[in-house]
Image (cartoon, rainbow, N blue to C red; front, side):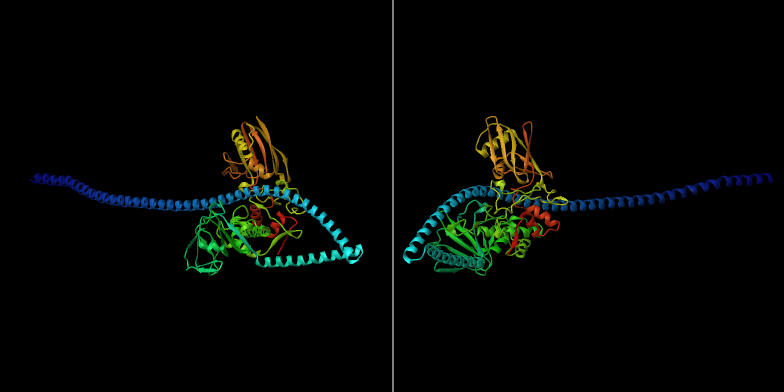
Length: 562
């Protein structure tokens, strides 16, 4: 019995010992599974949060990149637009300079012709002087005969009479000059679009405050902003010219003409003359008002103020010289508005240019008491030249046009500008064709080209070209540039930019090398090189030079006077 009880107790103990670990293991396994589920859920949540964060970061990154790209694109577009505008401005400026050079070419030929005419006139005056002396002698003899005076007394009396008449004539002339100076109006013939013709098909004009239209014996007025059209058939021409002005004294917009900035506006008076082909338009206004629209057309208004002031004085000098005579006597016009003279109103009036005109009002350059012609051009090669470049001998009247170095202690003022140095590679066949066309002589295929004579500043005065059928020699700066000009080759400026060849070679400051069938022209500057370099003036102004110093350097020996 006892044994049985003990056995039972042992069995219970053993069962308990076996059951407890099993129970514990089940509990632990259950706990582990529960914890794993919690951890798995947390991991899923964490993974989801991380995914969402990554997606948000990626979205933000794309949005930021897109904003940066858009901003970069806007900046790029703005820079391209500004660069394009600047390039267009420079191209227009270079085109005006080239047109100016072509005009100078014509004028140089006219100067040669004028010299011949002056020589003939001088000979004629000598003949007249001889005749006057003969008449004077006869007059003395006649006076001696009728008055009973001695020969010396008769001569003295005659000279006194002549002197009195001369003084009276001088007084009348001074009075006339004084009246003209008080008026100081210049008359400009307005050319058609592109400066192609002087006769217009019609005139379309309006003014903010209305217009006044006058003919001999008649006067009409228009309403504010009313546009009128006048043709050669207008009845107003039956009584002569038609005069149009703005009622309020303002400017008139001519919509039948286009210039660089659109339809131009004009101050002053518009005088109209009918011809068999159409209408000639003359704009008359004070010379100072005229200059306010010449300066921005000849020099970019963005240039330094002192350079603009120098340009204003040069433009005034040119206008004053042209006002000494009429270029179009039949219309009493002194100039036209193209590069034949000075470009007028092709660019809109600018505040900077107007200030330059007003701050130099009435100032002109004089040399030995006379108002001088102030030649100017785009860019120098570091030196200027003299009138010898155009085949004109240096004399007392043009002594202010000397060869000067355009530099200071730090070197040439224009050394960093594109046209300061340039070069052109011209194929042998192209050069042969250009020479044949420009010089009107066929020398066959060009074998050699050399500068055979140079002038002040190193300008080419003569070139000689030898071909397999003959040779040619070309003299003077403008004819040389024309001979080597024309389409068919490129000109590389020192900044690496390229320009197409034009009617004239950029300048006559150059040398020539040959390599195989290529003629390399290595040159400097842009323009004829006589007088003031406009870009040189601008660079001087950047370094603190005033307009008086600029003009003094380019036109030595001159004085600025009012």
